[in-house]
Image (tube, rainbow, N blue to C red):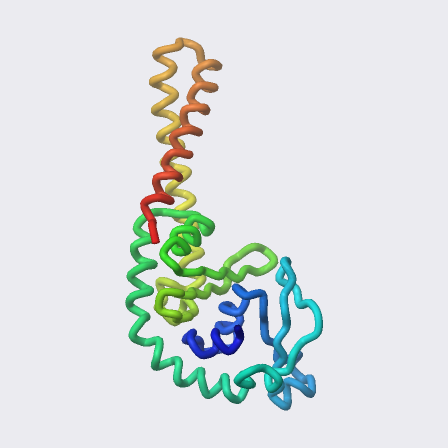
Length: 218
């Protein structure tokens, strides 16, 4: 499995490779900086449990089929930088189509997943986005957001998500007010009007979410 990923996916760093391997519950590890293994450019491959934690006994890279050692991977990084260039614009176009519609981080991921593209977000302890990686399984190319351009960097996407949230909340508030006024004229009761409005809005938003998912087929 490791050999299959290494041979077919176009990654340019260990983190990019690990982003793909995580789909198969595997990760590689160089050890801590300052350790003997790190200094000697050693590499271990670990199985991951359902929570993404290392489990079992690691296997040396040199013991695996094809020997995907760090030295071989570093040589592949350089080759892959050229191999993936022709697929950069295709990926940007796919992301741009999704970004025409405001979305939350989860909605953004879901829309791209439906197109065969995984999005991996990296967040700090405060929940702020500081890194993003895109895995295009259609072309088997892996890119960090910043490699695609400034507009796809973690910082730019973080701002876009905040703007999307503000826009969606504003639209929902406007819709709620409109429905409230219509129902109020019909019921002449503020309490009944409020409850009916909430129910109607819930169904409208649920229906809109369903339409959004079906409008982004594979």
